[in-house]
Image 1 (cartoon, rainbow, N blue to C red):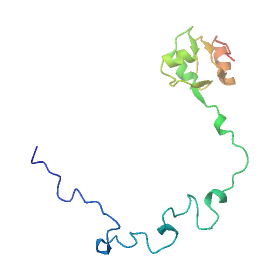
Image 2 (image 1 turned 45 degrees about the vertical axis):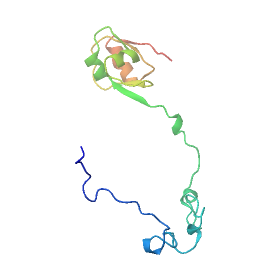
Image 3 (image 1 turned 90 degrees about the vertical axis):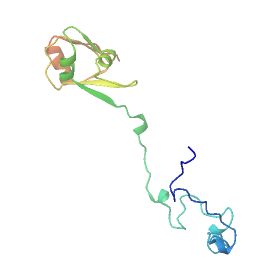
Image 4 (image 1 turned 60 degrees about the vertical axis):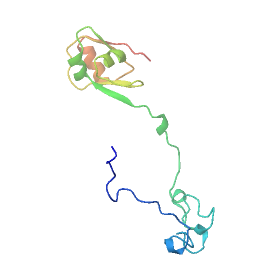
Length: 147
């Protein structure tokens, strides 16, 4: 263990400032000659652009965004239900999670009508498209709305 050393040039000494002109960082200590940034506590606030109208004031911000309240639904097609569910089963959020079709805690689901359905199933989900309702009822199934 005594022989392990860092390779040459891997470690460098920290440059100490303000220790005389011979150190290359003496005198003004790398802050330039006077001015706002040379003084202690000097400098400008974040976003200041030297008197030019700052970006955060140039960009127009008008109106209201409903984005934080947006509700997203995971689309589940009849094709997936046909493949994973048996005749007479109930399609609910819990059963979709058990079969691995839907993942996540606070997920909302909408059944879409893509694909064919031959099995008689009971659908217990909030949102179902009109095309899906038609195909489910045509196959002899029923829809029980939660909400």
